[in-house]
Each structure stands twice: as C-alpha cells, then as structure tokens.
Image (cartoon, rainbow, N blue to C red; front, side, top):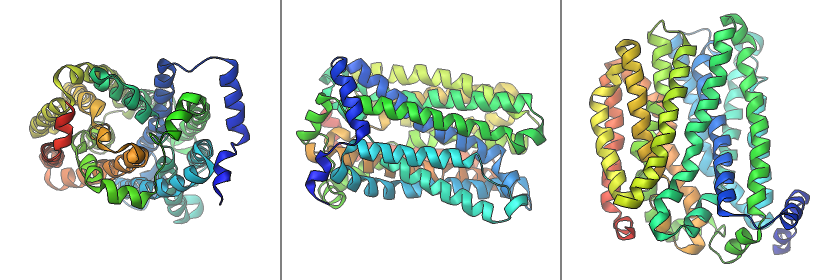
Length: 441
C-alpha cells in the first residue's frame, strides 16, 4: 500500500469532519464524554459475555458435564479474547498506519459489533453438537482481535492535554466505562432472569443483551469518530504525539516500560474479576441464591465503584499516583486475606464483599491503566500504550476467573484470596522497579 492511501479519508470520516466544521471546536469535556462512551461500550460487551459465560454457556454448550466442569470450560473460552487481543493490536496498527485511524476504528468496532451480535444467534449443543463450542471460540477470538483494534488513543490525548496537577483526574475518566458498563449489563440480565422461566431464559432471553451491545457499539463508533476527526486530534497525530509506530520498533525502544506497565496494574486487574465474574460463578454454583438478586448486588456495588474511580482522580493529584497505587495494592493484599470467605456467609457477607471490593477496585483501577503511559517517548506513546493495555489484561485478567474458580473449588475460598494476593505483590514489585513513575510525581 502507498502512503497516499492513508491520506484519503473514508466517506464516514469525511461526513464526521463536515459535522465538526459546521459545529464548533471540540472541547475537552466532549473528548471526555467520547472516551467514556467508548469505554462503556467495550466494557458492556465484556460484561454481557462474562455473565453469559456463567449463566448460559455451561448449560447451553456443555450439558454433558456437571455445572462446575461446564463453567471451567466456559472460562477457558473466555480467556481466548485476551490471548487474541495483542494480535489484534498488531493487525489494526498496520491498518491505522496505512489507511488512517477512522478506517481502523470503523473496521474494529464493526468486527466487535458483528462478533457480539452473532453470539445472540449461537446454536446450542443440542442443535449442532460440538460445533457450537467451535463457533463460540471463533467469535470470542474475533472479539479479542477487535478489542485490540479498538484502541483509539483518546485516553492518551487526555493525558497529553492534562495539566501537570490534574493528571490523576484525567487518568480516571476512561476507567468510568467499566462500572457503568457493568451496571447496564447486570441490570439487563437481572431483568430477564427475574421475569422469565429458566427454560425461556436459556432458550432466548439471554440473547437480547447481545443485540443491545451491537446498538451501543454503533453509538460508540460515531462518538469516537466525532473526536478523532477533529483538527486538534489530527494535529496531535501529525506531531507524532499519537502516531501508530511499528510494533517491533516500539517493543525494541520501550520493551522495559511495556513490561513494567503490564505488571503494574496486576492487583486491580485481578481484583476486577474477583468482584465481577468469579463471585457470580461461586454464588451460582455453590448456593441456592437467585442469580437476579446477586446481579442487582453487583449493579449497586458498581455505583460505589464509580464513586471510588472519581475519588482516585482527586487523591492521585493530592498524594501522587504511585503512592495511591501502592497503597491500594497493600489494601488489596489485606482484602485478599479475609474477603473471599465473606461469600460463604450469606447475603450480608456477599454485600460487604462486593461493596468493599468495588471501592478498592475503583481507587486502584481508576489510576492503574495510565500508570506508566507518560514514560513512553512521544512517537511510541500511541502503540506502546495499546500494547501495555493488551498485556496487562492478558496477564491480570485473562485467566483470573478460571484460576480463581479452580483454586476455590480445589482448596477453598482462601486459595482464591491467595491468587488475588499474588497480583497485589506483583504490582508492588513493578511500582518499586518503575523509577520513572516515581519521578513523575
């Protein structure tokens, strides 16, 4: 492909540019809204699949094994997206360099939306046998590839434009998408679980959230293109502040920062699944509790998560991001020693576990993803931040539900807490090594 291919914007991008020219200069608040919408879309897709991997896929695809084994199989397929995500970053990085960011985002979000809505038509084992598992695995891989390509650099744009004393505040804005996405996803599933019979829910009710996910992806696409097609974003791109550098060049130049950046948020990314996917699986497998009630506990707890994410931005600007992340890692380590056992103490214990867990998650997750982004040189920041995010999710989250459930089933809930403790210790070690992060404060 020639370099000129990149300078010829697609019709969709031209339309968005005309809208921008008719309206006004995009303000920082609009960038923040675009970032939140984009992240909410991604996390909504993530949670819709995550909840289905507990409530639906084990029975739909693995009826020939017990519920525990079926859930473990489901979690193994769940991990495929995280393995595919770095590959997606490499593929879509090339599309970005040759065809432009609008083509990259449009293709990635179209793939993500198509793979997600296709899950709504997934046939069960009773209809097509083991082919249903193959289809689910392929669609999950497509989701992972698309998520790798959905990196738009808007979070980096916020960080670049953030005043020195407001870096923590701007760093937390993209992270709000996680609790918002969870609230919507768990609320939707709770509605269908509560109002349908078990047979109807397993037959068709679970499919509707995947259609909603596709609609949200369409909104997110236009919200993101509204920003990336602005002159301000284009200028940052042309000035190499957000240029998609070749992957191998970035790895050679920034390999140390990528590795440290991937390990630095391990505590929060591990906790992320320990208060979302894992407890839902534990409650569903080991108690007689109605899933809809626990889904609502998750949704309400996520509201505390939103407050904690916002608080992380305020605290990070006052005490320093590195100190806050270290303090959160210590708190998560303490939490891991007793909290998982709360899940076996009834409704009160479940609520305490979820609220405290989401409060800790919000404080740590609110600052974790941007922990070392400022360490990257300007021309590698865009690609380096994307690769760091991919590896962090793979290492900290990809196998967390599977590992935690295996440990809890084999050795009890205390062992699941040990898994969370290991993530906290790795985070503390990565933050200690990362001297550049300390110099930012």
